[in-house]
Length: 114
Image (cartoon, rainbow, N blue to C red; front, side, top):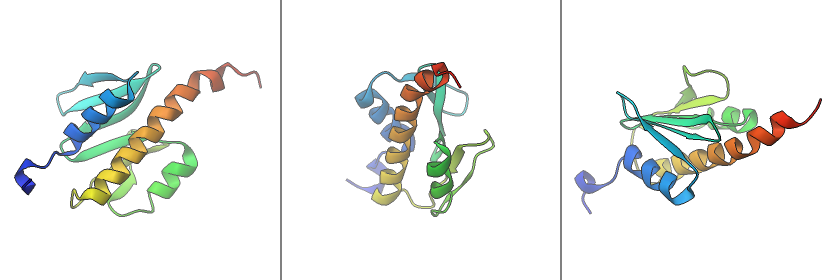
């Protein structure tokens, strides 16, 4: 497969969302947003993805190359890989799956009394 035929982040994340199941996908003017249990977990536009993560994972992710804070707010990261190689795709898919798992836990966590 040549580089021209390699899937980009939108295609990879769409396939992952389908594989994981229980993911709502909504097209936007820029690309797509993904949600689970009523919470948005990721937004992709071209080869840039914003992903909502738990605080410690978000902080660790921001220490990796091509990652910074997302304008979406606390806990969100923006991943803009300079090169979309297998390592970048591994990080993007791992973070997407972590966001997917986090969203599944969120309703139960909110229901617990303080």
